[in-house]
Length: 416
Image (cartoon, rainbow, N blue to C red):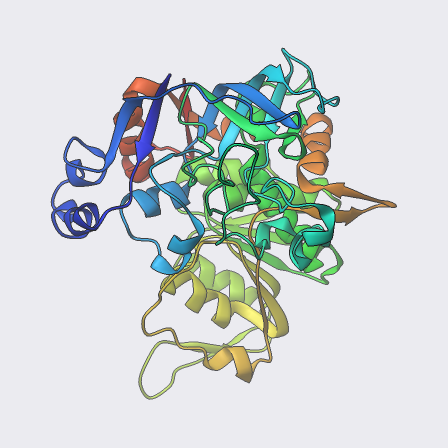
């Protein structure tokens, strides 16, 4: 099968971090450690597994950060390479093991790419605390090999399909997944919406876990990617009725945020400052440094960017005793002033992935809730996938995703 494979190497790191600044060819071109390869199609390793033909797979900001070696190296022990990338997966079931009953051959499915202890081959008595509680996105065994399998070793270390040498991701024609990772897609959800299940579920998970639905408001969402838009959508589709302000940069992003339910859309800079002042905040100018604020502010700030600028804004814009929910993949950040974290007694929370959620009177996986709400409330979601490329044009796809200011991309997807 054809697949886009990435390998982490010291030479690749040096080239991407040095010459990659001059030419992206050293990041995703012929001089990089990323390429279209021929691989043997994966076979299901047991009765609880499913083989899937990939229909669409999104390109995530974490993919861009890892390919360019801009992500923090802290997560490197929790991956294994070479790996077929891609974890925002929509596919069609091609084969099921004897232990799989909730999906059948021909069904459209989405895949939770995070690996549970059960996926690693461990019996329930040996599951880590995170997996036992339904929070498998923080699995404590991600840096270890899985349980030994008959006739071979256990699964390689790794937290996520797409960064795992034994479990190819969605930037290939076929993949395999454990039954607990696979969720059937209702017929009323089109492909270009269904492929958003994974990134939208991150926003859904952050909203549900943070308690933002109980916020007195106002709420500010910073960012203009799929996770930020998913957060706006999740807040509204789950019933948040307070004031919701979205910060985006470009006209088409502003239009999407409004369509998903934002009461007000602002751009960084003067518009953002005015929105803060409108909450009752008062501005002060210290002897040195930028303007600071007291009073007013946003009861909850969702930072879906995770860089120095967005975190500084979050700290400054949050109200006293407010909370900041970090959904951006923040890594090493230099010269980050944390004064207002303690001066305002803020709560800073970070979330990754998805898991078991308490919603209504039941407990369900984030993907299940997201798919249900997609079916009931698809407002503006079909406009998020702006570019689709065939697998062979993965370099063009990456160029559009990296240069989203020029391309106008929100979510770029590959179609094997």
